[in-house]
Image (cartoon, rainbow, N blue to C red; front, side, top):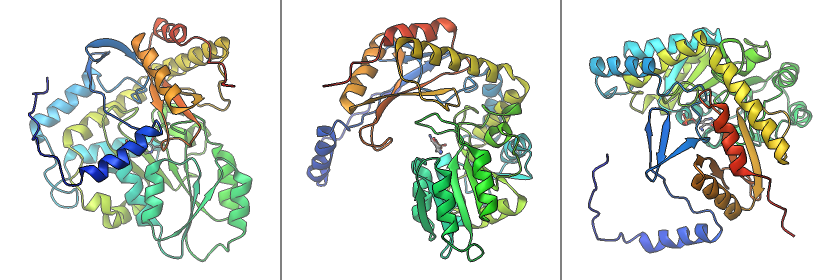
Length: 401
Ligand code: PMP
């Protein structure tokens, strides 16, 4: 249990200004606060009540696997609580080498480099790869960490409508190839929409127009493809993607983000990616836990099969209730678009009261007017838990007049 800390009474001189900004957010239904939860085994406790978690990205239920915990604990005893330095100095341990080797092998790639978060990996890699004179083509629905990486890169950034590869093709055709680098950035499975990217079509366009592909595989790593080798493997196109990001805090149950690709890419990044160089390395125990999680995820395909079955059950049940379930979903992330942020929060609270935690997602995480419940299944959900969520949810609300 966390110890109660006494708060210093004095307010900061900045507070009145900050308060004004917060008021404006709250007035638009966009204020955020943190909810403290406790995980005990497979149960999640919120405000002292046990609930079933449909908001987690721990898709394969490996975050609390005894073997993962044992591997992390052993590394913790041996290497201590932290890396103690940047990876570039004395912060690289055998645990880091091990997790990078496991991830490279999973993706059938020569090399991987582990950053302390997926966010840091995107920001550091994009800014290291794209310079003045280069162009980054970024899908309009890309994650904030990609957007921030593009902002930090000195390259020109062109945003194309989500998954509109004709629009991308036209943009690429309008600029001469062969001047600078051309990098197209997309996600394999979109975090808030749950849709699977039409990667084969993107590969066709990118090869025709001499552009490289940067794939954020955060929500697909471990889940899609044979062995869980991600979106490209799912489409039989491993080797067609120049740069892949696998996040390590989702299917692999720990924390971090690894860039997977060629040995040259890895060497460039450890020389150039500022979020890698100027940041303390991922804790060795986390690296060891993730390495074990990657091994287990490959050896236990039933986790992916169960996840798929759970996704199908949820989507089928939602359609039966009359919810509009988008097409082209990868399966494990299901968005229910409500529209209004307050309505979305209220529905989330109602489900929580019924014993189910779901994510109520509002702008700026999603575009204005598209606030939604984001439901995620995991390999650990039992049929009865999914059915329980469905009956607590009921039919969709009537659209407002
Ligand atoms: N990319 C995508 C698509 C994500 O959804 C996220 C986080 N949810 C990240 C990158 C950042 O990863 P991390 O949480 O490890 O910082």
